[in-house]
Image 1 (tube, rainbow, N blue to C red):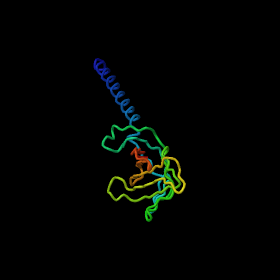
Image 2: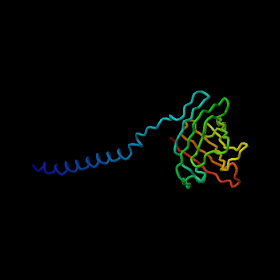
Image 3: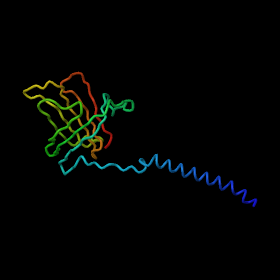
Image 4: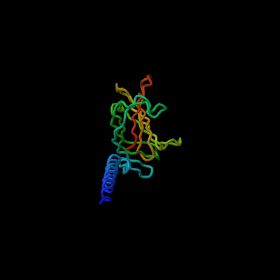
Length: 181
């Protein structure tokens, strides 16, 4: 009987310790389950077929007034989220893009939009480089005329856009950046 009295507190302590351990493990699982079991979304808005790439991108990007990819990237904060649309086909045999590219608030204007795309040969982290610019033809359109320099990773998850005004001398630039899909 006396042995039972000594075991009873040990059994209770063991049950409490096991209960705390199971509860802690459950909390850790629910808090971190997305990180532990994260499945990447497949890219479905870009389709590659040999030398032709079909873009049907409509994603949210972060807009910056300072370069978020430079040396002081940690200190740079986004201004807001903007919509970016890239619809059309890129043909690498001709290095051209037929379609439209648009950054919300910095749409290409002018009478003509000119696009080109090429594979990046500089051995950077980007696989593709695209250029887009709005130009005036015979009739002048009285709006800012923006241009884009677009860097795209091989897996199409990261797209970075450097936005510049083609008519202004003030050298004011913007960046639209997405850090994965």
